[in-house]
Image: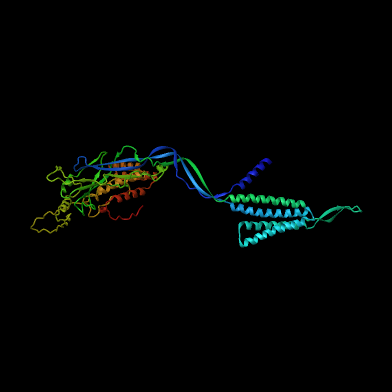
Length: 555
């Protein structure tokens, strides 16, 4: 046990004398893969709308497809090298300890040595002590006076050391001359034992002065050791460390993004073909107000669009530019997409969707060749474009002064005149009733179709059918993004079955209740889904069809 205690004490002292504190921080380096395995992960979905001219004529082909895109992720070990500059702390404390122990050791050594020399010889010892102490003190005072005019570290050191050591020698000599007393035991003649105090030669004996001298020398040694440590424990230290991680996941920047599998056709989606007339600067047919032809994808294959009638109706308008604008707008496609989250968090994030339109500049329909008349279809296909609108655009292209769109004639109110007795009563014309609104379109609860904006009833993009198509597409988009596609599919099937039920109103109410329960189980409220679909529809509604909506009074 004593050997273990002494070993621990020596280890502790070594740790105290040869260690210190540092202050600083590490600068993190760049992670470099050491050994990794590559995994292909789906990062986004790209919807591609491709417009083409299969026969080089005026019958176009629109194809919509969706394709997941993947990127390589690195799983494995990575290495990181960190660097840092650290400042050594505690050097001044060691220097302060060296100064204090040096002062105490010098004073002890001088006092002990002065008393030791004085007590060695009572006749010559004190004069030698006083002479040596005075000479050393005088040298120290001379250094002090010299440092006043020309100060230096050496002169300051000699001033303090010589003056203090000389003064301690004089103090030791003076202490050795102080008389002391000692007690002795005597037995008088009467037989009674007693103690008598007799004077001694010095108050402090020789062994005590020798002990003080040894202790002072030891303190001087400690002062030298702490001074060396304090002088060496200064400045800064540059450190480098390397850390290896075995669970880091990162995207591989060396491998480009690629397609995961074959593209799948878009079904139940629609797009708008914007037709811009070359010779029109403003008004219908211009870049600001292009002619719009809505195309609904009804099957897995491409959809054919016959624009021969429109091209024949505008022979003087130059080149027609046809561009594709999907009803549901997504961010534009860009190559080499890197997700914002790391691969291990990709499953918790919503997979983004991007749109790619090919060709981005659109297709050009060249004007008709002089003298050539293409075969006229049995029934002209104008795609909900008014014949009068096309004729007014053609007149504007040919330079005729005519309004682009004729104003609607005011309705003539028939005047009813009471028939005379001699006349036969004539039958008055009965105005045709207004067409009733379409039946329930089967939208999710909360989504309603509004009447077209006043003055835009004839616009194909502002009709109730176009509004319904936008809402249906937005419902599918929100259902996919909010992960309630199963609930939406079940609601569609339920509404279809409710139309043929014996009590359609009660069946529809049951469908809405089932929808509310399904979205609640998915952790979503029906108002959140409705807000998503309305925001999507508003963003895809043309500016000509928008009108101020009344504020909702219910959530």
